[in-house]
Image 1: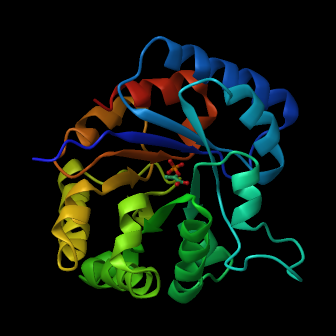
Image 2: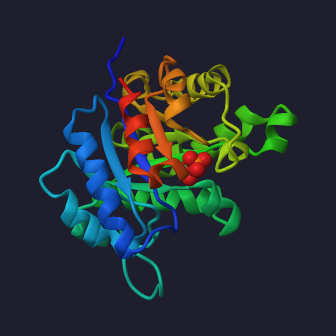
Length: 252
Ligand code: PEP
């Protein structure tokens, strides 16, 4: 069986201020210095990337962004290009988060464009996929996730998944306190791996698939113990250093 190094990535969303960023990063760095088996990444809001990037320099913690434009440069007011994120030292970028899909109308085609522009620039996209509660209740979880994946495979090619991460985030579990059971999550993670294996078994086998949705220090261990769960994408619980480090410690 392929050994995949777990990744725990913090998605701060639109939270924080200069005064809160500094102590939060200091807390995370202190926890990581104690020894964490997982790779750790922090995705702050765009405006705090330089500040967080400086604080992370020389540490084992990677910098990531929460979004990226599908365009390379030019007349796109308010957008941020992948090359700019590279300039600031980002390694990762989240694409297709459900809040981007559902609040800002990002379609599978737009998300695929963002994945392509991130990959081309040398960033590692963290591609978020996941069903809404109504999809799950209608028995359409796999169909929804397959469509989200297939749009990206078609646009970017399976080869680009060699330097990508997928995050399975059931929309009904994000920020709701309702966490998927380890079995529910494992079932979809295995499905995702299988879907990619139709194109390339080696890439599918090496791909890290994170779980996201109300992960806390108290429930992380049982989720991360599942065969196809390779870490987590953490929203609310990543805003408290101690809680976040507790989650990182659970990823062995
Ligand atoms: C997320 O925003 O990706 C997420 C999983 O949020 P939360 O952990 O708060 O559910």
